[in-house]
Image (cartoon, rainbow, N blue to C red; front, top):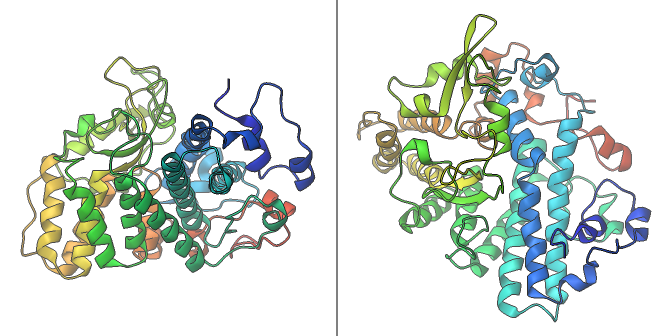
Amino acid sequence: MSYRVLYFIICCFSLTVSCKKLIEVDSPSDEIPAEDIYNDDRLADAAVADLYFQLSDYFPSNVLPLINGMTADELSPLNSYQQVYANNAIPPGDVQLLSCWRRMYQVIYGANAILEGISASKGVSTEKGRQLKAEASFLRAFCYYYLVNCWGEVPLVTTTNVNETSLAARTPEVDIYRQIIADLSAAAALLPPAYVSSEKVRANRWAVMALLARVYLQQDRWEDALALSSAVINSGEYTPLIAVDSVFLRNSRPAILQLWRNEGYTFAGQTFLPLTVVGGFSLYPFTADFMRTFEANDKRRTSWTSPFFYGGALYYNSSKYRNRTAALPGKEEYVMLLRIEEQYLIRAEAAARLDNTGSAIADLNVLRARAGLSPLSAGTMRDSCLMYVERERRMELFTEWGDRWFSLKRTGSIDSVMRILKPSWKTTAALYPIPQEERNRNPHLTQNDGYQ
């Protein structure tokens, strides 16, 4: 029996076919009709598990963060056809971004179908139904967080009714964030602190609170961000910090949520690591500016970046993930979604914004001690403290789901930073173009400024 429930996905999630085709598609003989999924705890659970699997796929877990790194000041691609990202000159017809957009909405449609199906179900147990609805809400919020940060106003889809969604217009960002916060708040109330399996591959309460803390930081809700990040840190589930070499291993202590990879390697490892150890090169080296930002003796530099030569010049690639192929037992890697180090950075920034620089510096020093760096002075002034927060965040979370790209926009520093490094920078490039193929299908989708 297939637990991918492809018929369920095709019928309920796809944005790539017309409404007529959605209605007329027949159920393959070896798949499970959608109406049967919610008559059984096991099948409903498999439908939710499939949403995580979709997020771990090539486009959401690898391509979108990769593009975010190139459009920011992190990565400088060596292949000429990807200079459009580094030059912030992405055409509306870009097929990579189109695929990322569609995969995010595919997961959203799946989450909507699960929320509707569980609510109408009489065959799924109450306890299982609460868990699955919470996970679906979390995953919908996760996807919308990335959609709104990459494209700004996007269609807010909370139903599987194609008559309502196929021609949906873009929704103001404030309303999207309102839905994100509502979804995460609901999920936090329903999920327990414990994981539903022996691995950290399904959201628990701490994962929901960690993402919500990030969202509150994005919304300048400093007190809320500080409270939630403190709760996650103080849970004791993910501390103390471990050596940088082990952070990205399967089920590592700091991992709050990871995406399962059966082979023990990730697309990021395949993308960033050279094909061969000797004489190999990566197509996605770091910018010189990024490498200069590391302090001397920073263990993150020596552990999470690797040198290589290309065309007689020295470059560095990301080596957070070490596996390009199937891993040895104990060395398996999963895709990292959320980890405790970010919660220290969230709490530090929130504290600094609230003029509690002593607490902020204390959190930064936890990360710096693990990185082998000397502590910052407890008497650091607020503006300097915020500069330290920005630097530590850049050095800690690089190449992870576009954090640097989002942080530049969140702090309002994107124009000043990018104009120095990219003379052709335009403010409108802070948002990506709405995929033209989606606009062709839906005339109500307007285009972002700068791409007409």
